[in-house]
Image (cartoon, one colour):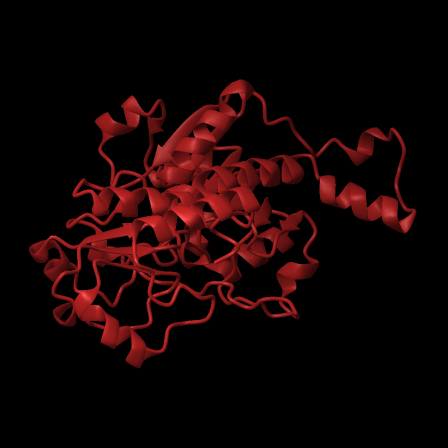
Length: 331
């Protein structure tokens, strides 16, 4: 609670609704079910309550304080009853977009290798051979796999670099992509023609291992792949082998299992920048989640439509999947 709600927003929360539970640990199932008949809204950090809609006669909204959608919900029934299912995904967009840009720069300029060499006392000074395989981001063609909340924020961050932005997103029309100032591009063409590739796609029923070995082999030598959405979208073992073989570089924030295997070969691969799923873990971003929740609860309490969080859409809601997320806290 303290991570996502500032003192001001916590006060607003209690002034807006009668909070039941509101603690850090999960609400016991018996207590949850006992509260359902009187509930106007449910705010959840991770859905664990199964199919309970028929027990909540007055329910008007389910607000999930995460970047995903609870797959256990009966979305058709939610839409039928007018229950809004809202995700805090837009609240993470700015933080993840900044991290994606930082990872791209770190990888394209091999900043991590320079840091490791300095710490080991093995650096080379002003040696041309030490930097000829790095490149500037400015003016390069970059590819976005997915143009959702993160992609749109990242596109804006890239504008000063003068990059041509290609985008592949089967859930968006070509006309929409043109309006978003990107070039709609078939996936294989995007992979082959981009110097930096940002993997930003939401995990769905259709896109598991979308970036297969065959598609990863289309990536031009010396390019950079930045993976910040979910590893679900990539054949991670093929990615590892190709990076270790020096085909291209990669910057990675998400993994097939989290916490991640300590012995996995990606950990020792040259040409890779690794981050422990922390792209969205910034205090400002977490507090934005709390503001979004309270803003939308205020709207619901006033009989108005919520505007801050992202509403599930009938055409897409059942196509999202839940993937492994980092849930361990360090002691």
